Image (tube, rainbow, N blue to C red):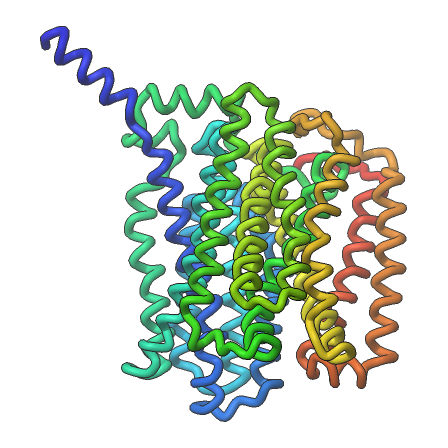
Amino acid sequence: MSASSSSVATVRESLTSYRWVICGLLFAATTINYVDRNSLGVLKTILEKELSWSEADYGWIQFAFTAAYAAFPTLLGRAIDRYGVKISLAVALVMWSTMSVMLGLVHTVMGFVAVRFLLGVAEAANFPASIKAIAMWFPQKERALATGLFNSGTNLGVMISFGTVWLAEHFGWQWAFVSIGLLGFGWLIFWKWGFERPEKSTHVSPVELNYIRAGQGQQQESLRMPWTTLLRFKQIWPFLMAKLLTDPVWWFYLYWLPSYLSKERGRDPMKSALIIGLIYTGASVGSIVGGWFSGFLIGRGWRVGSARYGAMLLPALLMPLSIVAYNTTSFALCVGLISLATACHQAWSANVFTTATDLFPAKVSGSVVGLGATTGGLGGMFLTLLAAMTIQWTGNQKLIFMWAGLMHPLSLLIYWLWLRNDFKQADVDSPPDVTCAHKPLLTGGVLLAILGAIFSGMIVTHWDVCIKAAKLSGAAQAATAAGGVVIIGAVLIYAGLPKTSPTRI
């Protein structure tokens, strides 16, 4: 081989970027995930007519999904850490695609409740698995961008889901569900062929592998650590609080925005695809740009913690503009500011997800992200009742828009007060001593148990008011979430008690 040919071959080898193919596979899975979950809401009007559903029936069906999606991420995150990303995400996608097909075969409310519950269980694996895959395949400075790219699939999935109306009108609602379920089985072919650990992949050049590993530090295949030990690391708490406070903001825009546009702005979002498309296009742009920006700062020499704070600061400062969106008389400005708010949330989300892998190694990232997804799900369940009751009492969504504008600045403040500049990865190979009581966990557990008991008591004693505001399903969802807070309090108390067993199982 000539010197020139050898030089060309070396250049080609150095240009391999297979990690972005992995990001593309995760983007496709996330898109399918959101098409599957959002299709029921899009087809709601058709199904109410075809199957004679009441609003209460629909509420119970959605409650089944939400409860499962909140309850199972922690368990699934541990399973992903134990069995690996490839098999875990494949099994999850087979299950949620099968459940999507099954939605086209059931005709009773209880049938839809059961299938949507199992759909929620399976779909809860997507983000813990995807964030773990990003941590495996990307150096630290590129993780937020990769996260932003695959996370933008949530927005595309919402937009694509509106196409199920066309399928339902032309081929029947059954085939709409069956068709979107088949998308997942098609994805599995590419996943089986395309995903391996970087060092095992035949598509990765030595140059790319060295580039990935140089930005990650020492890697370990897996580490089976009890969640009771994970909760003793201080690094996990800002992440959990951020998910608890800001995930419901996204749920608010996802589930309540159509009602707001219809009832308070006089626009039918089902017939205004341009409005929905604009809002979620903005969210996609925000997800990608927010992820890129922190990597850009790291490339300019910023420390990782400073870069994440910097990338989270601008979205947090801009989120209060959603309050202006509600109060303006200009519909164009309202849509523009809501688009900005969804973009800011997704920019924020790309970086918050990435802090989980900044502060914890990839070998336990599935468990960490799973815990975060559970806390975010609980926050979303509370939102259902709080939003409904606020609208019932005030007749509008003004207070909800105010709340949505303030959660991100509050979360960033918690990050800063909790970690300051001590943005260091937890040393999970030298875990804290679990044979001693952990007073902060015990204190927090007691306070949460008391708070959950107070919420439960308020809901029970004002049950008729709750039903009037959010229907029986919404009240039951909030009661479940309040009970969940009591359980979490008990869990924290258990985690804080001294243990005699080993820290690894």
